[in-house]
Image (cartoon, rainbow, N blue to C red; front, side):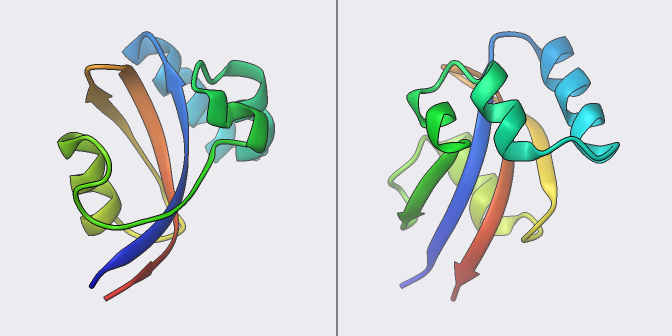
Length: 93
């Protein structure tokens, strides 16, 4: 069974999500941005969500985690919670 580990940043607007993505692409630390801006409790751990399998997260999030490129900042991903930037840190088939 497939497993993945990921970290994310959750914010309320697409505009903020895009701005934070730009900062990370320009060299800002993902974990630090997560601690400062993420509205998810995982922000305190730098956005780390640990390891999980398919179907454990909401569908839109799941799709990105199990199909997106590992190590790349993906998003904005819109879910009922808001807008996410997602980085898949590992994935096994």
